[in-house]
Length: 111
Length: 115
Image 1 (cartoon, each protein chain N blue to C red):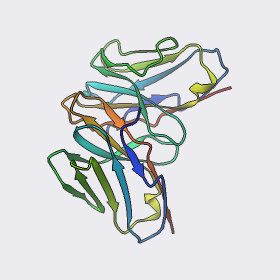
Image 2 (spheres, each protein chain N blue to C red):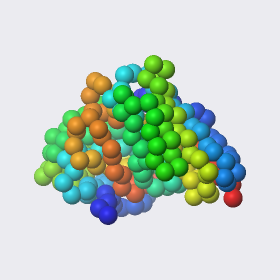
Image 3 (cartoon, rainbow over the protein chains, first blue to last red):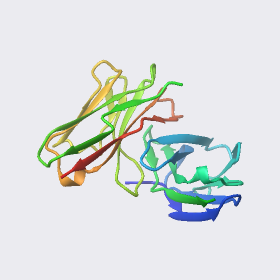
């Protein structure tokens, strides 16, 4: 079963625009991570935010976490065609070390 | 930069045949994961190793799937017999330890097609 649910399922934007993806989860977590997956390839870790953090930045990425709403958002600013990929949130629950991935948001950036 | 290696990259087999996938994690990484990813979905954990011990295999269909990590380094995932529904991407990942901060490093995956 998958804990995280990403929204939207798919997103199409123009190059230069910002892309926002959301993730909701069900149980208490230690941390939440975002991964990117290019078509037919393995996942690449983007950023990790701990449960006691509210916002984190890495380059053009900004992640927020609201533990009261059990949700997170990933913002990609000034998107590029190379950002076209699927983006997954993954949660590490407080009950153990198992990481659970959501179903992903498919982002398409048009040049 | 160290990477997780997987082989083969692609595998086509007929149902009822046996298949095996191999994974070599990043050197020194204690935790190794096998995931199955169906097209259009997120990865689903099949089995997690801490060194050579299985710490989670609750989603592994044990009647047909088996996994081992005998010396706590590389790992093999086997399916016998393969079924049509096993067609998917099989991903291996590793992380330095089970400290609760499980940043995982993924291999390129093995795409399995069962005919």
